Length: 201
Image (cartoon, rainbow, N blue to C red):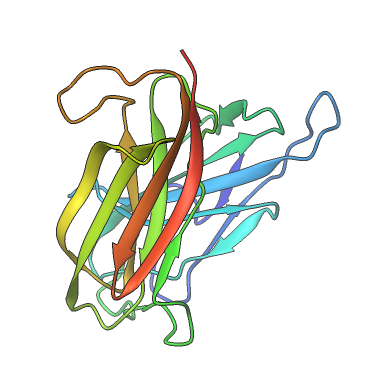
């Protein structure tokens, strides 16, 4: 269950901490929680984090006079996910501070896709730290032989925010990719990071 900020709350202070009630897996396996915060007006993900805790401090841009929606998905060791029963919304006040990713954070962070393995769609999170100025960013998916399968991001993206990019398991021509192991690569701000994902059919 989601706890704080409560549904329809007004938030006027930062940093913002999202809190939810932890749950117990029937098989007593360890659970992870993926929390996602979106702007209602733009439907853009401004923050996402996967953790074993029952709270997360938002380290992204939180603007004033803006409505946001947040939700949590609990995932077990077999990548079976269960969403919270509700999605909570809150509105920021006129004096809400701008929260930027700390300068000490890595300039580029590429997270593990969820779910993984996946059948239909999977979400790939990444973070671009900075002052907000845009940088060139590329997120591409390759097969096990290194052949390009799908370009997910290609172009300038604002920094000081987090992204959640969805891949539907199709290649650049729109055809379903074959089941197997793939690699997704992020290039941005002079950094390159690669992670592995698994597509099942």
